[in-house]
Image 1 (spheres, rainbow, N blue to C red):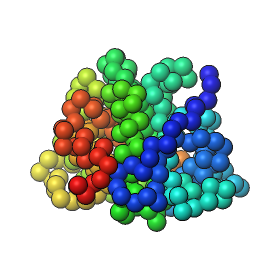
Image 2 (image 1 turned 180 degrees about the horizontal axis):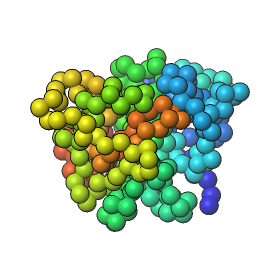
Image 3 (image 1 turned 30 degrees about the vertical axis):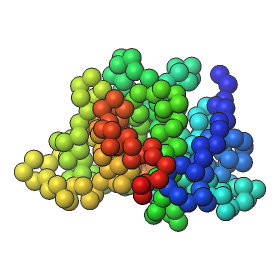
Length: 272
């Protein structure tokens, strides 16, 4: 199987800040910069460890990286030669490439059989992160806009992937996980399930004990963004000790997205 190829510049994306650009990784410098950003966020901020961590070079990477498309948020004010120009990243694996590779990354945590049986055109999203200095303002909208163009150009229909709660203390996330199970569980035809002894039942609290406001405030912003688009989660979470997270599988069926949601994440100017 050939590694993923580079792609076109996706322009400035959503927002009006010309300092940002969104494109697919084009060369080794791009990929190293993405892996360095992932190290900064996942290892230094969130305490990830394991085989994918290269502390000597400050990179978070694995053997699958060459086969994914890496959608990059570029800070055009930084020098690519310094390999710090990437300030946001999504790792993307379309279904046809996953078929050739033999699996999706998420196969190690969730039974993806329902998605495969759906016959829909799938794309797996993962390793999403934004540099701490760029998490306010238009940066995330730029990245979302680039993702929307990637999906539209390839006629992809189902987006899915692992999204994480920081830390493996189940009690700390019981309210949020219970809310997701009660209100955002995927329909049976797309309902993946968590695997192995690391699987965690998300139905942790009785309905009467789930406080909507407290639950929503405890859900990470990226997960909330998918929920606003009409996304849902699989059945059960997965405790990932290597990344120091509790993971849920997010699923977004583009056919069920409202026109308002599509417009928000694909328009050129979010202030329009």
